[in-house]
Image (cartoon, rainbow, N blue to C red; front, side, top):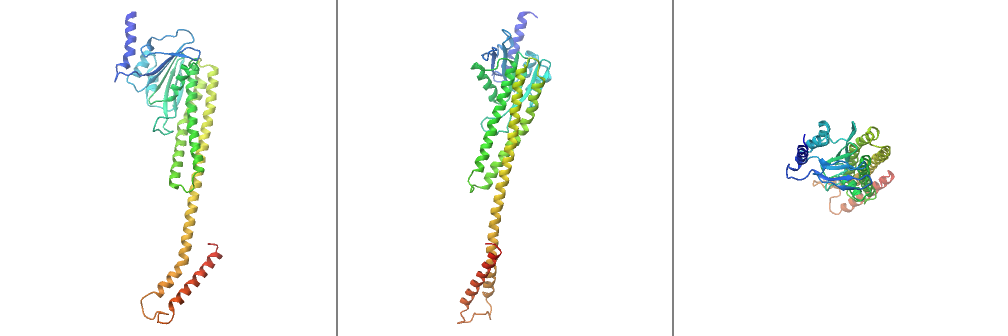
Length: 347
């Protein structure tokens, strides 16, 4: 192929995505890392033509994976096999990682901090790298890549592909700690809360915390296996110090998963305690009502019996002082019942 034809083909590849839909770029941002912690921005049009200027340079682009044509661009411009490109742009978001020759492919999850989202609403990030190029993809806004990009712009970012992967994973896991801390604070507030607060409202809050814990545990546990796969099976360009960094991230993830178990158990204990207190309060109320009913039932029976409108009712004749006699009988019966209740330790 002549040089002019090759240049035209590359231009067509760069336009595959920009000519789709509303014309917006699929690349959210791109950086050329200089190997010293910094980097320079790169435009979408420059990406197909990019070649490392020296041994230290590498390319990182962050893409919107749902943009039309992304899979085709990955296959044609980066030479990614079709099954891998489908994985990078598909909806299979369970964390996993594997080595494909000299490339690393991974799907990782992060906490969803977008407005209106629950902590267990996880966001996925797909990653591909051959050691000189790193491609990350997402569907919904994810703060982790932007945090690493800010480090690069500040000159304190990763220096190569391996450290970029470790930086992304560290930020993903560190964000998880914020949700765990928030849930623990919420449990502490409920434990120290107003005893008069509506029980159903408190139980609903605890149920929400438990659901969040279960959701995070369910979604983040597979990430542990994915990070282990990166640490153990990454290509040779993933250096020993990168593997140590991933190992430390794995340790933090284990601690966070343990913290989730503790938070879940704390919420369960608090839930059981509140239910026990509510049941005890209900039982006390029922006992009080039973005692009152037991005291007044004989009195009600006596007054009802003597109050029927038939002839020959005792003490009903004028001058018999029947009313005061009945009142005295009721008071005496009431005192006897109180003595019996005290002896039985009802009061």
